[in-house]
Amino acid sequence: MVQTPEAKTSAALASQRSPSPPQGPGELLEYERALAVRPVPAPPGTVHEDVLVPARGFLPARLLPAGDVMRIVDVEGQQVADLIFYDPANLKNLSSMTNTVLVNRTWRITTGHAFYAKLGQRMATIIEDTVGTNVVLGGFCNPDLNQLRYGITGTHSCRANLAASMTA
Ligand SMILES: [Zn+2]
Image (cartoon, rainbow, N blue to C red):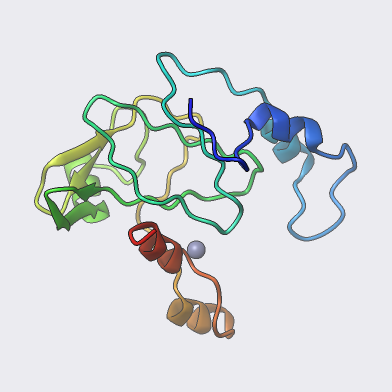
């Protein structure tokens, strides 16, 4: 297992949480706190890398060989993991949520469903889903959209994170 200096396990994070109740907007509700401190079972096989992505941060893009497994854990609760798959041989061929919904014949993407590329190739398959609700139609936020939706400019955005993940 490779850990960056700031990487911590979800168990270590859970032990650092305060038992105090939510104090205001953005704080976790009781049931969310219970979910957030739920122990995460160790994955089978060899862990090659265990990285904690800080809030509002991003994970630099990784090459995921066929057969390898990527697991995403929401360690703090109320987080969203924006995700794009790229064909390393053709970076213009990336995951398409439209194709993913069309091929799977549902927008309720979960265990057993796969993500499909713009050119149609299967890119990844979900082998376990403990979330149950994965929004694949919402796109990701960007400063222009945030201006329209919230009337504020210069926001941090998922688009910036996704772009940064390909340049880091
Ligand atoms: Zn966003």
